[in-house]
Length: 239
Image (tube, rainbow, N blue to C red; front, top):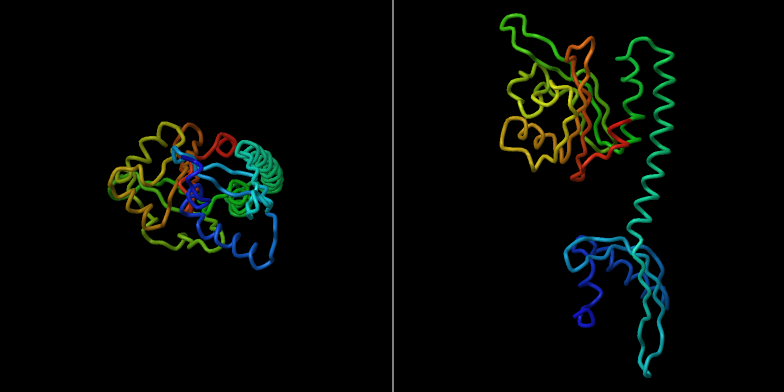
């Protein structure tokens, strides 16, 4: 079965353009060899990182390619994890330094959300603070601080994120009120006002960490990924 497949058959559809570029470059430069890391798709549909080395050879008087392919998925994942831990430690030191210099933690967050966001690879980092409607007594929340990555639309001036009624976002607040972390892929949420809000902001994945002050639920810090469906790892959450 494998011998009947072409090189395109083992590449993910999203990598088709990358493959075409590699083949075109090789042809233009008249290169007889190639070495690099690419994506391969296994029979079960899973995608792996593969280190490929190929060399043109003569085989039975015909031109052929001898290819060596090594699965480096776990190796690259370990390297990325180590690099991320180093970034988190460096960011943690900068945040700690800011906390020492400033007693106002809102000022610290305003100064360090960009550091935190870049360290964890988020597209947005923001702080929502809880408050109460003086007329109705309803529990509300409003966005106070936000950092957004380049080419990501900020939401700090979005009026829809002010004076939100917490009961209208029960999927989120029922978890945070128990002093538990909330995280989800937007696609996995039930149809609701909360999901519609995330879709409007082009959020693929969300992580929300509750803040309690003196035993009282005070607000939360949120992290958005607007490009990938992502499950936040332990190091990122503990940071």
